[in-house]
Image (cartoon, rainbow, N blue to C red; front, side, top):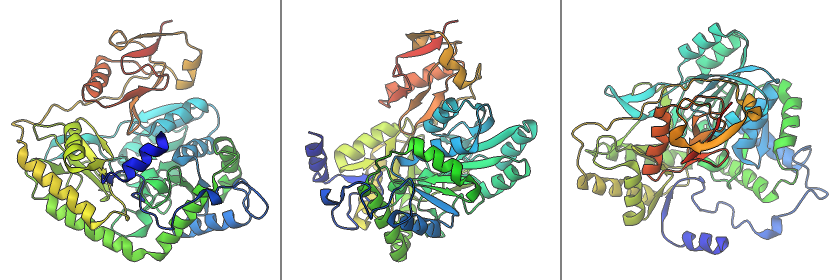
Length: 467
């Protein structure tokens, strides 16, 4: 049934402005069952590479200007878990940007770490707050590390799901000054090194370790990623953690997809120039929109942005982001990456076509003419940093009870609640539930946005501490 559904969707004519980055276009013929094998003689071993797999990783090191590159076939998630495990010891204090992916918080809980959180400012446009977080600024990192000299690791997401980039070079220098290591979840920035129109990569900017998802923005199969490091001192620790979080039976189909992707990058620099041209033309055309707005091109609280992420705001209009996505899907056969209450994300890649970009801007112009500008900007659900009552790992031993979420105000949550995508928690285990958080979960449900939780109780219920 699943196979048939996938085949039918492939023939539907719907244009994919979403991941994976290959956009359902083959760059190396079909990948057949004939190449799906295991670690037989002559085919190397991902966990102890010396032959053909090592050659692929060496190629990745060169392309990404890293000291080491580890292939990942369990996605960036296993790279995030492995990196945090390799860079910390149980009980370490770590500084985490509160807009990190859910896998970061799972690693914190699993490894028994003590997190301090920082909440980036919301992005702004002409003094009006936008519904997405802006950059993490170096001054904020400096203040936190000065106040908390025992913090051993800083964890940031750059670019974010919406394409917001932080000043990793300055942040890296600050971390080194304070003796802290820096890990950057760069999953959505795998394409950065391959054209100067994009921001510089995290490892080039001095991050100790970063992870990039090849499948998100480059022509590689889903689950393929790379773990990159600037320091060979982490080799043993990373290999130990990767042996835990990476499957012991890695897919050779996925690994060959990584190699094909790296070859494509090496041999097709002109395609990236064409890609930038398409983006520039789209940005120019988007200026004609009167109600909808392509954001992050001239916004405050944003150090830099990934131009490949087309984030279209509906905050000044009479429709929601989910309504815009539905219209694109139903009336124009365009599927976007995600929709939120006040915006959509259309993910692009080097594999997008002129026809795809033309379809999207034409559809947005049509829709823009059919909707009205809101008299006042919508009230943005501004969330403050929740109060931490205990460490996440301490929640495991607490006596909990599943309650209706409306009855959870003032109680300690024993699970993480998040919208997926993008997988950023509204509340983390050990934090105190507030009415604002409860209302935000309700708003997600009202807008048909999936609110999930680690124990499966959201959006209507939540496990909380009752001791």
